[in-house]
Image 1: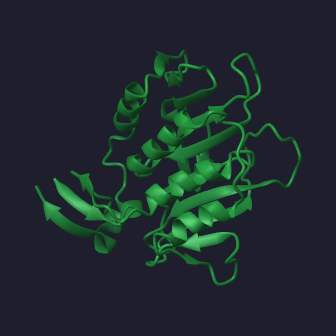
Image 2: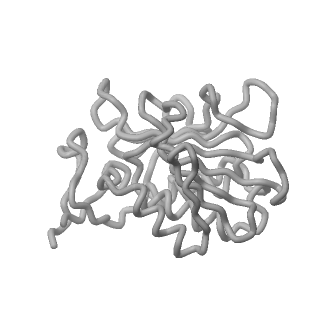
Image 3: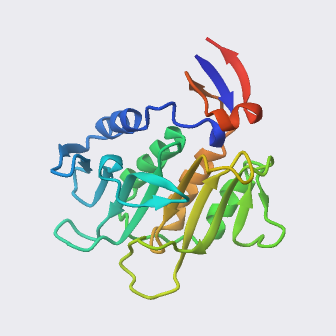
Length: 228
């Protein structure tokens, strides 16, 4: 077992489904397998749900298949989701778990009052820096291997707001420039900024994380703090 930093390059230890499933069970969410060979988890109040969709291969972000989809509704009987968030395999499960805790504790998961600066402030508090060209919308880690940015939404990102040309938070890690991304995440336009900030703060946390395996592309950029 290795304890490594930085978290954003640590990968998911090939256990993203299991780790997030355990976190959701601890939160009391119910789980059902679906006919599409996915796993659907729903919060006790019915307002929040997340689905392990890798087997269904719905679409890709940055050339990587989406593994988890998160969503929230304004009320349990609503057919339309207020917002959606999507994560590929390889995303550090600690950051996704901390986001789920924040979503679970949010009394109204479709409403937020913080502005986009909440996300950048959370990252800057962890010593990330504003992008030189877009300091008000983008922050990068000190090693320039991971970015969180307010961008035009990729295709297939669903949101309750039907207006075109919406922007939403995007995050990605590319430890080797020009090589495939390590992981990608996309948050639709209506997702409250304070929830994205919870993900960003956890992603940039300096606390070492345990891993049995580390991504090959990140090996030269990871620091092994200790072995156990």
